[in-house]
Image 1 (spheres, rainbow, N blue to C red):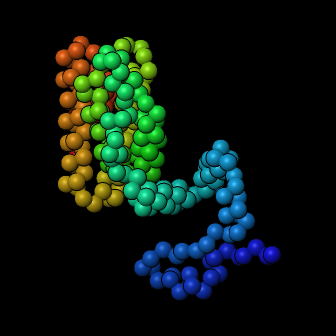
Image 2 (image 1 turned 60 degrees about the vertical axis):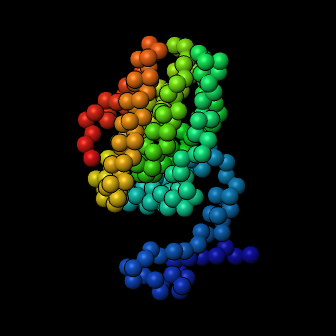
Image 3 (image 1 turned 30 degrees about the vertical axis):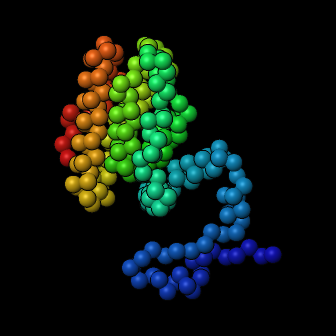
Length: 213
């Protein structure tokens, strides 16, 4: 059967070129077949190659579509079982669980697409979930928390760009998220002092210290 032409020729779309809403179309049948059947590694390579050789507007359109998708699927919601990202162990050897990796993947998608404040809300919950836990130096828990600390710093940068770009329309809600993160980091630092443990979120604390919203 013949491959359908680009939807740009669809009269239903041309009728919407009034500036009031984006022109919507359909993916070419063969392109849709590729998307549905290519493996994840190939899709990543294809997208990176396309964006690297396209004008900046292509990347903006890509992240815009990503934000719409993430917001539509409620990806910014804090998981109800957020405490499950850590296993308390026997009281002195807490460890990360597979749930932590899944949560960090979600937060990276959020701040990578420009939803920095949404990702910070989830990361604040992760930080708070460490309070009361104990873990040995140099173990998997310490390594995982170093990743969380790095993610917070990147999410803060994403949130700054979100604010500067005019996409954070509810300033009060944004400030509430930042305050929530500040309190979680401060609580974690206080808890670390109680058991003479190493504070896990030094980079996050430094980034927050100099951030005024």
